[in-house]
Image (cartoon, rainbow, N blue to C red; front, side, top):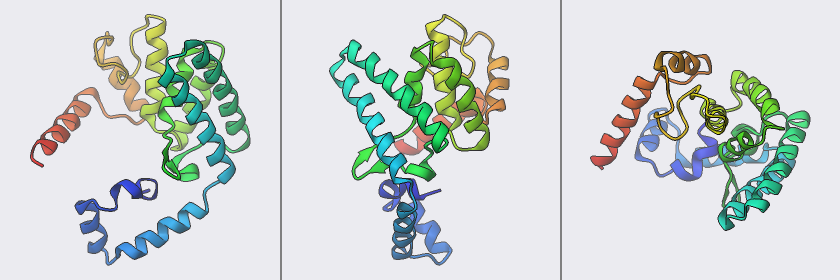
Length: 200
């Protein structure tokens, strides 16, 4: 699972210590990652790269007509990917195409903005969450964003803070159902991370 993050993590002292503990050297890790990259689905990588570039470029210019047009193209492209290849998970496409960063989260988030596509993605992506291919947080953010559009209380509490949560016990049950930690535990993780960054 470290392979998609290798470019960012290979100099991490904690990671270096971990693989040395198990008798793995950095050259062996580089070889494994190179072999992993060769097994990626290149057609899926290229298709998702196109979608990611469309997604990012139209938002950079804040051209709302172009944003809508590109999001709808991406919705159709995602449906095609799901039908032909399944979910474009990190294990299938990685996180980088050359030096272009392409996480799935932003594109999925923007599918919340279109009522003609949202019901399909709400159902289909949940299947990929349950199979372990889609990160639960990406799915949860999409659902919460659509809730915000329709002035419905958040289902998972991951999009734009906690002000739109009406009942934390219901939210915690929902989070548990897709593999997210409770709100309390999530806050503890965030605090621990913040504290660890202060000590560096």
